[in-house]
Length: 444
Image (tube, rainbow, N blue to C red; front, side):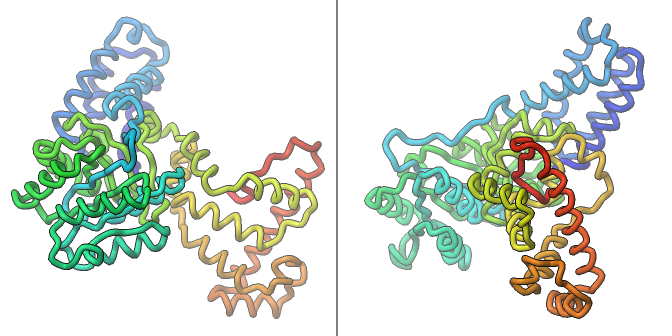
């Protein structure tokens, strides 16, 4: 999500590492390059300037100037200032002492509010807090239907025009929706309000009225990260009228340059609470300033990677899978199951970005998630017996599988060969003493 910014900053630090000592001259040169990198990433100009002032003050300290590792010192300084810029620590959603917790979502049309509402509902449901969705957008065609579709896919109730009548206004829908949530003992109510293509007084007055009536525990401003500095300007205007308590950055998996993430918190003073990293309802991350700073500097984010793995890999299943590996009973069915679990963790390029150093190693390499689709198609075209006993796959069987999966015989041969190589490797590992082989993801 910060690929270009990460690449530019890495160039700056690499030049510094080639210096014997850090001096005011090479500090000035580095700061000019960092400034250019930040502005190219759509970081707000004022935010970039204050950030650079803070870095300069620390970089020109006596201890740093005497350091024999100027590159490392500058990386640490920039990392610390990035963490400070992004908010220092994770800010969780505030929960009411007496449920339900009311969360109001605001933002422009097309920023991803409705999809985020579904993602947030799923997140609360996983945490054992029954959510309730309220469709308060009566202006956008099919907005109510879209939220109902999302709610149905995760088995979360949705309240809207069907329950209040076609003549109900957004304020009335929110009021009655919260009442319905309270009566059904729901823990969290998420109010999905309407957006506009641009900010107007009518839109803001409606949101102010909803806030005054519902007294939400959280008001989350949802911003399209693709808008860059425009998102920051919009956030400022929303904050002036609504005093929102946090922001959400959507579409961080696209061509976003990351500037919004580095600017919104500084400009509004309110923390970024979530980022959306894909279209699927699972693609939601809590915003951790220290982890994001590490990703920007190409240092990876192993903690988030482990958390994603824990969410999709069941501990009991992992133990059974390890037993199968030891008994050399690992089949294509098991292989497919592991692939599906990895897909739930998110796009491959994002996962690789969480591994320290992987970004540099794989620079220029295109990680194609569609490769998973092809592998699954080949496995699905096998018979149950073939998936368990791949050694019976002769020429005619492989031709049939290729036709059934829309691939070539060469693709089938390649997959079978890779699978057999993995089986051999596992066979060698299984000869190790018990407890030495730990398995959670056989394919990674």
